[in-house]
Image (tube, rainbow, N blue to C red; front, side):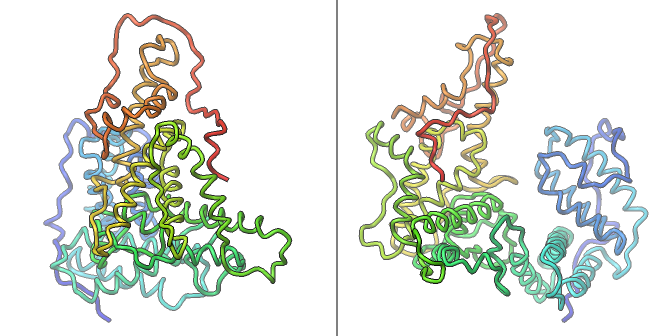
Length: 479
């Protein structure tokens, strides 16, 4: 099948983004011999796979490697146009020099334009490394699919949709879907179908996986075309299980979703095994008992229920009495685990997590109780490279924590001048947080106000336990 395209920009039409002359001085420590991916600042982490793909295919086609780096540079410009992140300015300077050099020294091997070059190389790469090699190791195939995915991303950058053949896009969409079968995992290879690994044959594991993949009667979120994990042209969001549904609904990060899938499955399986007592392995049925859900719900939401009682609030965990499956329980547990997975230092403020979960559980109930079955707009909208939840909920709170720590000057400033974790967490022990903070959270709320810096702070020394968490009984929500 021919997948070549006739569209795209020529070599003369491509220009590197302009960089002010005062920042184009070569920075020491950056050289053309360095591995590009090892030089990337942490704030530009999403471009690392692109640069690694460029290094991988450098010997096969230097021109396509150049196009990969060009795509990485364009993404870096979009993510941080002002180069305000730590090390971003130096990295961009290095990459501009590298691109200027490669622009002159690399030549097309397969076609007359860069658009046709990347199309043909993508086609050759898929045939060479992805077709007819099912006996290759999982990690090896995962790397090949990752590189193919990057190449398709470069295709979309170099040539507009109007310049691409429909058959080419259909083929690329198939490659993107097959890529999920070779994704990385920690303990449970959930995406591998044949042959199933031994761990996936354990009755409790099989039962938990089956429950998680029961997505019947769920309304589907409308696709967010800005999400980098979902190809632009795939019709509708990719939803294979309940946590995928939560991912698309609330904008969690894909890596967090994959981790919490394993976490939830193992929690269910382990608790069910303990509850089975002395039942022989062969006599166990492939199902999770209702008592297991009851005990897990009680453990996960112990602190949340205590918080609701203290504030005289009705819990937003609403399970229909006539529910025929454990789908509602799994959605609420999965939602909490996904929030916890991306909370970072906000985990040190357990009642703040209760507030976040309470609000999001309310959103979840509203979606489930709508009853229309029509696609819905997700509560959060993405703006930038991070997931919507991280960007809209966690990052603003983390910024407050960061500013307060800076005000403490390592514990030398009077405690009345700044707030520690307990001070900020105490804010969520009062109903005033609902009125003042709102939902979605109001960035103009007093909670997000920057601390006022004074010149005549009273100097006092305190032991500041930054990043240390003293777990109390109410914080022990996980098994």
